[in-house]
Each structure stands twice: as C-alpha cells, then as structure tokens.
Image 1 (cartoon, one colour):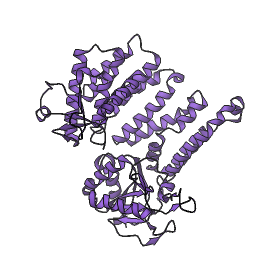
Image 2: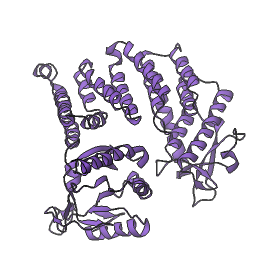
Image 3: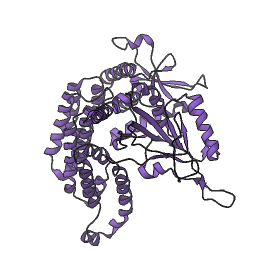
Image 4: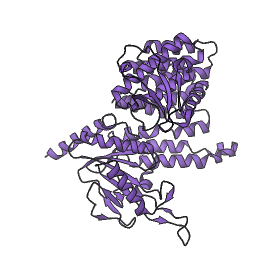
Length: 501
C-alpha cells in the first residue's frame, strides 16, 4: 500500500507546484545523447508568471516519484493534459519522440536511484518499473525477486508483487507486449495459481483479466478468451458473497463480452455469460437469513449489473439508428424522429462501415480523441467513415444557454476554430421540467446516451455495413492501435459478400 500512497503523494506534489501544468524541459542535444550527463528535471512552468519556475532534480525524487513521472510521460502522446516532455517550450507529443525522451528520463532516474540512494526494500518494485521501461527485463525480474525474498515481505506483499509484475510485462505504450514478456507474465500467473486459492483468488481473478487484455492487444483472441473465461470459472471460489458479487461486476466483463460476441454463436455465449454473472449477485434466502445486512448491498450491485447488461446487449447486434438534431460535415438524414423537434435518424445498415465516437464538450479525453480523429481520417479505407456524436449540456462555460445558443457555440468551436472536417452529429434536445418561468429545466437526455448507456468519454463503437456493432471500447489510442485490425476484417467481409454468387 505504501507504494501506491507514495506515488499518489508525489504526483499530487508535482501538480500543485505553482498551480501550473507540469512539463519536462529537455534540450535538443540531449535527445540524441548516449547518456544524460545532466540529470533531467521536473519543472513547473506558468506561462503567465515569469518567476514561477521550480525544479526537482533526480536526486531529489523518491523512487515512487520517478515511477509516477515516467508513467505520466509514457501517456503523454495519448493525453491532452498532464506531464509532457518539452523542447524549447514545445510539448513533444509524437510517439517516437516521446519514447526517446521517456527512456532518457527513466535512465537518468534509475542511475540516480542506484548510485545516490540506498534502495529500500519497498522501493524495489519502483526500480523494477523503471527497468521494464528501459527494456532491462532480466534486472526487473531480479528486483521483483529481491523484494519477494525480503524478510519484511508479507503474503499480501507477495500478491502485490506478482500482480504488479504481471502488469509491468503486459502493459506498454510501445505496442503489444512481446512474446518473451508474455512468458514472464505467465510465470507470475502460475505462481499465483500455486498459492492457496482462498488467499490468491481475488488477485488471480484480476490477473486473468489483465492477461486477457494483453493477449487481445497482441491479436491472440483464443488465448484472450481463455483467460477471461478462466477468471469467470473461479468466481465460485471467492469465500464471501460480497467479494464474489463485486467481482462479478468487474470492468473486465465488458471486453470479455466483446471478444465472445465476435465468435460463432457469439450473442448466445454473451447471453449465457450475463446469466451466470446476474445469478452471482443474488444472495440465497438462507444467506440473507443469516446476514440481513447484505440487503444494503443489493441496490448498488443491481445498478452496476444493469449498466453492464445495458451495454453488452448490443454487442453483435444491430445498433439503433443514430438520432440527433444537428448534423455537421454531412447531409441531414431524411428520416424524421419524434424524439425532439428537428430530430432526424441516420440508419446504419447502408453498407458503410462506421467508427462512431460518443462524448460531450466538457470531457477532456473527448477533445483529444476528436483531434486525433481529424488526423486519422486519412487512414480510413474506402467505404469507412468516422462519426462523432455529442449532446448539449445546457450551458456554455458558466452561463446557462438555450439549445440553439449552445449549438452555435459548438459549431463555431468545431468548424471555425478546430477546423474539424469529419461528420459530427449533435443532440440538442429541448430543456424539460422546471417551473413556469423555465427555472430548473434540464436538457432532454440523448436517445443514444440512454440506449447505449454511455458512461465514459469517449466511448467508441464500430458498426459493419449492416449496422451491427462489431467492436466497443472506451478511450482512444489512435486508429492504428485501436481500429485498424477490425476495420480491415470488416472491409474483407464486405468485399466477400459483394462478390458472393
């Protein structure tokens, strides 16, 4: 737990310095240097305050702080806010440049930790994180083993170290984990399996989902599904109902359902999975008689399960027509919808393969996704289209706004300021409720937000030419990483259908 706490504290300290964005200054000559003669620094820079510039050198950083900083930097090509490498005042966001800069910082910090600080046992996992970042997998394994052999290491520490090791070797911003790293990760899973199941069941359950995602990213779908279903298979071994029930609403359920939906008889398999999970959160009458307080958990569990069911019910099935009131960079659909004045419905079974993103204006990650989509649309094969769908919020900045006022603000922002050219659909329903003067009225919920139960921004679905949802995910890491494989598959399917006798 101290590992997590220290990391959070260091990140918080970094962010509050001068109350400004944390960036990483880095000189041009250091980008290509073999080593870093001058250790990198963390710098808090305020563009409006010339004197507000403080630095943290590597020797002032704790091991957890170094690990946290590298983790933040590693995300800098997929984040619109946070810490970024900077050269001459310009953020380095291109992936290849980020790799070079992050590695240089990791190397400098690792050298500093090893030569200027006595590594405490509980810092060994942070040291391993830096070593993995630099590709020093053997040394990282040694650091983990050294921690496991420490006299102060408890059973709980063992579970943390093994699960952390699995995460180290399966999570990388350089692309899918290598086969060699997957072998290392599997060895840690095997050690979890060798522990008494009553002790390791929760950690092993999550580890199987971690392996599922790693295999899926590498394109090994059969292995991915085997690990996901392996997690479900150990659900009955959770010793307590509460642990078992909350495991059943784990976030790994959605990507598992997505994988199953893509297989033969996929919708039937997804329905069976959801039936098992739904039954898992229902306590027996005998258990409720012994522990009546469990009833307090049931509303929350039922709500979480309803959200999962509400999402996966669309996997492998036709998506409802896209209903919006305003359509930018595209023709206005002919089909009228009764959901709101000016609402039209876009049918999705027109032969076009679509990548549809869902978000809202105050979502920072949604802004980042739209910026990336503008660049990525040139990568789309013929007959594939991007569509981004948003809904109004009832205000602009700190001022309440009518739907049409908000629409105009968004139009100016998207088309005139950001120059987006891909299709954007906007739901700007009327404000409902409130008193006679309209006070307290709130925007009518988007039919798409309600039907698809969108919770995270951005959420993406991919529909084939028949309008069937073939892929679903939250977040966006670029077309090549997220959609290229599934789109190529759908394009091939469409070509085969067109040429079939």
